[in-house]
Length: 128
Image 1 (cartoon, rainbow, N blue to C red):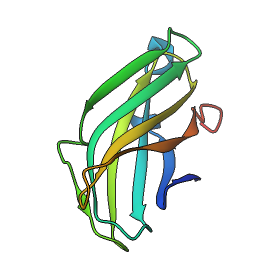
Image 2: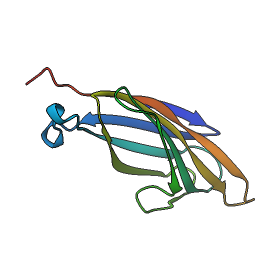
Image 3: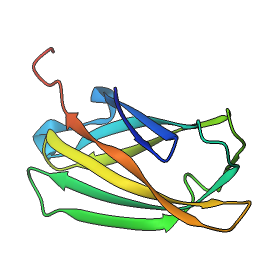
């Protein structure tokens, strides 16, 4: 698990290689990642947008942006957290991701960029 903290917002990510959904001989590797966002600040915040950089050893880097996470724009009061699971497909069994969330402090409308820590995507293809 990797973690980053920005202005009291803690983002932790844990990854899993999904061997049962992958086809290494067809250059198709599936990974899931579980993200936990904890609001340890003194302000209520809302996650508005996300931005990802996806690096795949077998392909060109990809950049993904969009609203919210998995269809939601969660509001987190101080001390609360939000968790979600998402996924990524790579052409190789080796890659990494990093990114940022754009969040709004609801008391004053200030936008903050919360870092998503870089995490590795490594297929465990030698345990079969």
